[in-house]
Amino acid sequence: MNLEVPYHLENFIGGNLIGPLSGNFIDNVNPATGQVYGQIPDSHKKDVDAAVIAAKKIFPVWSTTPVEERFKTLNRIAELIDENLEELALAETNDNGKPLWLSKKVDIPRASANFRFFATGIMHFATESHNMEDKAVNYTLRQPLGIVGCISPWNLPLYLFTWKIAPALAAGNCVIAKPSEVTPVTAFLLSKIFKEAGLPAGVLNIIHGTGPGAGEAIVSHPDVKAISFTGSTRAGERIASISAPKFKKLSLELGGKNPAIIFADCDWEKMMTETIRSSFSNQGEICLCGSRVLVEESVYEKFKADFIERTKKLKVGDPLEPESKQGAIVSKLHFEKILRCIDTAKLEGGKILCGGHIVKPEGRCAGGYFIEPTVIEGLGPNCQTNQEEIFGPVVTLQSFKTEEEALQLANATQYGLAATVWTQDISKANRVAAKVESGIIWINCWLLRDLRTPFGGMKNSGVGREGGWEALRFFTEAKNVCIQL
Ligand code: NAD
Picture (cartoon, helix red, strand yellow):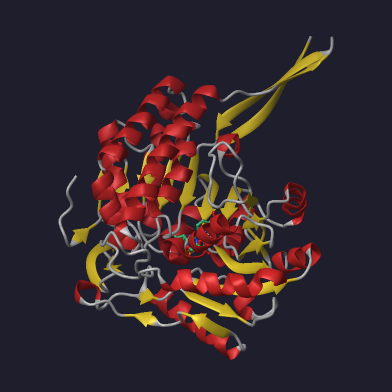
């Protein structure tokens, strides 16, 4: 599966790797070096049209392929991802800037886990029946939707891409998928895996390109029946406005501004270790990272001192080095955005407790986009820094006196994706969990994911739930069949 550098990627349409019909390409930059190291297709409507034609042709075959066969193919894809872990992880690190050890340990294994999970899931997927005593029996017939669109972001490139594709394929749909134009290479490698695994040509098509170009062409195509999208709230709004008048099924996983709520009675060591992780893992570029750390007033100063000391120890540097805890920010554009957010925090009166600067590693990463993990205090809940998603290694600290105040602060944003609660008082933990406006609440832990559970945000963090049966249901049309007895 070796790719030659510089990469020259192609779309995967009808089982073939082909260049964009326009002949235009976009540069792909390695954020750790700042160097262009490949090119990706700048695809548009015509490429999407070709993919839809290929998908339409094979849909009658794939949708009626016995689930045992779909199970086998998806499982084979999972095996091939595992076999190619080293190459996929390196490609992801070069595209995204995340530490290689993280990609190997988390992202790529989770991508194969997604296929394994939905391969077995479809074998157990059942529908309901409702008995009307001696009058009638109803049963629910769940059928694949047809052709569906899956659009994913750059932060967990292969993991989130496969999180959408796997249930869509398992449920018998054909897919037009678009990875982020910022991190395209793992999806390209996956197209080779799909071929090797024997997935019939046209069942899965991968189109590379920008959101406005390739993405909107997928969303607005009349034959694409559903869109599963993960990305920013801004793009989610745009996608919803295009899809709603066409009555497409929509699942939107969007931005967050997640609170970490820390009560004085927590298990201190565990809380500190996990709060460092939830703040700065993957350079803070995980939608589930906590970016607003809310600390009970009685332990605020102790927390601040401990947190800053540990944050300063996080090594920022070459993502290929095993000791780098933080790699590069994904792109120059995002790097500049984060720096602007830090400037805004200062203008709003925030005090930078640590970090806030660019990091310039020596050697091959001298031209890369690195930022110190940054901790800020002294800002109220309504300022821009505490309202808008930064999506980088930047957290704010705020203190609270009571449980009620903690909840007010936690809920004081437009977002509702994830929250953590740290306390040894089980009743308090459950009271808070019930009142935090958030799709997922972790009590005394962070990022423990059971793929069987529904997953998704509230408020401006999204609509629709992914994960477990919810994802398989999303990718099917439910019909009720009523039989009079
Ligand atoms: P983004 O919205 O810029 O792009 C995401 C994907 O959508 C890309 O493939 C992009 O090309 C495409 N896109 C952009 N505009 C589009 C349009 N008008 N039509 C169709 N497609 C379009 O997001 P990003 O910068 O890649 O990712 C970061 C964002 O993703 C953050 O806001 C983060 O919180 C969010 N995110 C959310 C979750 C979740 O589960 N809720 C998970 C990961 C990331």
